Length: 194
Image 1 (cartoon, rainbow, N blue to C red):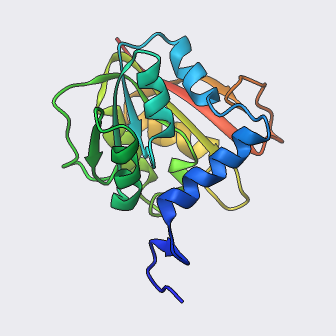
Image 2: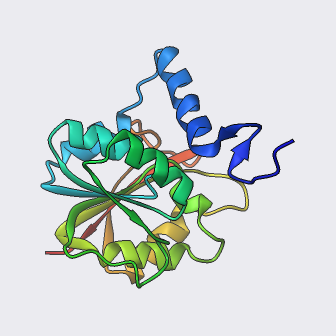
């Protein structure tokens, strides 16, 4: 039995992650809802924060957007680099203020439950650090599951406000279904002032 935490049997975690989305696509699910939402803002540049194996960043690039992907998991980034070596992939912890880029972005997207997978208690640092990489008027777009006792939209709005961001929109899905108090998923768009 393989005891490497980056493997399940003989299959690397990045490949397992990709396989899961391949299965969803084979079932007819839209795998690019996050991209369509980001695209609706017509950004010149996008940071895919917590990019994993690059699904969102690669599709944004395919559609002509200037995109950079960053993730803390080197095995996930290894898969992203294999799939799209022409893109910029940055190793880094989203909560680490030393994670720096040579520019700001029109949109920072955190798809795939990034805010509930960061180390507990670092959500505010992550939001503040990502807000610091937004251009004037830029948007932080985050989607995550809502679980009892987990990160809440109220907590999100609080840490976003402390980072100088204002809630612009919130939906229960990436295709903009209305958010209600009973929603089990939130897609939040917070905007930096001009």
